[in-house]
Image (cartoon, rainbow over all chains, first blue to last red):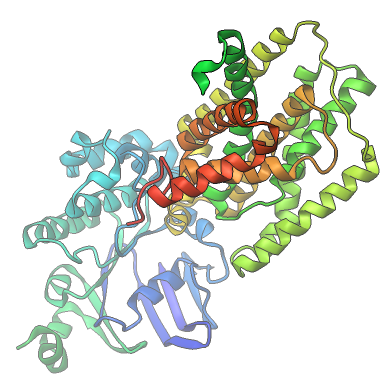
Length: 234
Length: 285
């Protein structure tokens, strides 16, 4: 479904990503692991066209997307729930959700999506008339995920959805991620929380200092000595 | 001091303040929209306004169109020109550096002024109202401003495209991630902003004469108003515009005409000392 093929990317003169390849197949949950500053967010930005790679190619559903503007990529079905939520603070929860359904395809299914979202996140239904900036951190993250789902994604990329949230909310978010996947949405999950991520993912990639150092099935990665030592504290 | 003024004169001051305030509201709202969405300070905004005035003037002279109806034609012409200028000029340099944007919009002032000077000469022109009664003109000016601002409000608040404009102004990257073509939104916002300026220009040319250079001072005042009201705050632009008109009108009567242009800037400095985010602006988080 998504094929990232030997890409390199930089901010100005500083190269961040070195020869990265990865692929996501339909129906999977794939996770990108790695410490702070490894280039995970840069990789995600490159997939979404917010940054264009210097070399290599990115294909989605067999079409090249690495030169397309972001809005076209989004309308093809790759949707990002960005790091730090990035909600629209001075709009209501409802308006934020409507913006998720901005694309033509998503707009047609708007009512259906809303119903589904209010079922998953009843709190958002309660708060739909509130300004998004008045929500708590956990609620904002739920809104960001819900807004992503409103876009009817074929591939949903989540960048650190658990960052800065209380454990009980993290638990809920991960439960939702699994639920979304069961509804047929393919997921690419960027996480620092290695243990939790590998619990729900089919496969994972480990990114360090802008290079892909390891990849494999979830159980292979969990059993890997290096991962155990460096990330799981075992 | 105000108490010493007789009631009829007081009413006149207030009415005049409101009329001028209407023009400021239209001008400042357009400027605010452009700044909000594109984060570009369009110094040439006053010239778009005057161009709108000239187009309405020509329509009323050569076509015989009622100037109040010509507002809507002028709006479209200037709006389309705004879209083209955004595409050809601003679009090319957006995000390169603030200085480029600044020089470009300053340069546009002179390009537009000289073009207007060639087309309409430097002699002051006035649009003659078809109505005998000045009071009727005032009522129409206030009515048209309310009509246009209501339409603007509905567009921004209630339509999909308005929602996309607000989203882009609040968080540009997030707007892109919603599948919004933000370049398209830039273009529309610039067009809409300059169209609003054109309406202000037509009303200005109905109440007083204009030359190609009449746009500079009102544009500066519109900047003052959106800073006073809080950058990006639509309500701030409306209340700021009306308030500015009223204060200016009072100042001219009480202190004399030489104070007309200075008084607003004095207020601006005072407000910024007390409330740096503007009257309706919010603190940066």
